[in-house]
Length: 588
Image 1 (cartoon, one colour):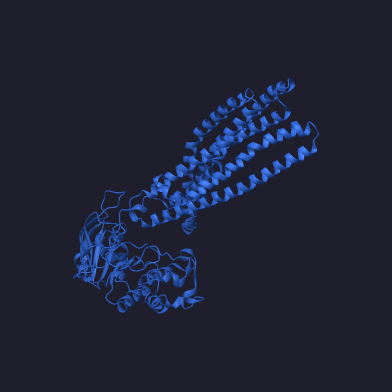
Image 2 (tube, rainbow, N blue to C red):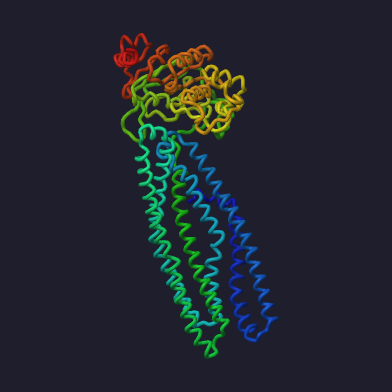
């Protein structure tokens, strides 16, 4: 839990003052039973109205003091819990954003969401309970026993029997519920994961008429969550009735033995009432302690899950003295970089030197022994069957992954020597999945270059063949985009993501099968516009269409991660059987 110390240090005042005010409230609660006992024994017994009114006013005043300090304590508790939770959530989100694809592959989206929301909320609840109850519960427990002893030592022995009994019950129930809380948390992750898949794949589910199957799958996940939640609730619900039973028997014992003492004049009726009040306070204190322990156990489990993310080592990061100058970017944190170091000029813009790559969850190479040299301004086509390693090749350029063997170079320097922000600012990347974000169309277009003018944006829109439908939008660039760009068709989203990548005129454009939703004519117009309107831009086009890459300066043909062809379209048609088969399957 070392990772959390810095968060608590920022709220030391609240963590100290909150319990201190709660302590004042507890003192008032301990004094009130004695005052009530005195009102009964003196005021009621002697029918002294003035005495009753005076002590009644003191009791009311103490209650108002208790309410006031409780409100102040609650304010400190809220400030500390929400503040600490917000800081943890912010840092956790920043940590997740530093992850490369390697780390993101380890965590599902559902579990990351739960750690950012549910787990941190549990920690906030534990901090709030700590501030409100950590001083109150033990002080009320010990104080009630001491106050009872001052009234009658022999009768207070009942307290010394009751307290260990209740403590034993609490311990047994806690021991039974702790593993159940862990199981419930895992089941919650499963429900979240199924929910996310159902929402994201709603159209696919309807297309295959799998609604009933997915409903059953969701129901099974929720039933598992319900069973574990009911079980833990059933066990923990025993706490109140069992402790109440013990307390009720203790009250009977107090009335029994206390009644004998009243008859012989050893105790007064008011003192018996005070005894019962203190007994009730002991029960309340022990139950509060149990709730604190439960909250802390949940928070510790959640803290471990959050720490797991914090302690995950980032495999890809900028080295010290990294090459490249950082440009301002709204979505990424600035890093230290030596501005005097810039990449040396090289004959080649991009080089793959005997590069092999394997994903961390498999021993088989996704790419094997790739050698490629690309001059500035060249267009490179990458083609192959599904799973041949096409996307894996381009993931290595902006360091989404690092090569397991060999060297990837940009401008003659290993990509591992670059500052990450500076390296990625060289690229305009169009991913396979076309994703737009909620906000205006202008805000989406300015992701790569925050200060891009409308003129630059419209130029990119024109190149991407989006001009026709963008001009028809209400407000044009001020048009509101729904989350994921759901108010655009698939082809429109693809063209807009291409436009977003072109804004700012990147040195290297990567198009990862990003024209799959476009018709052949629009695809051809797009490639022609990129060629005519980009100045010396190096372009990588990943596609399964021969027509999309046939005019590229170099074409790489991949099969099971191996390069089985390299050359121009004409050369490959003569020398590469795999390429010829792909071509013939699409044209004949």
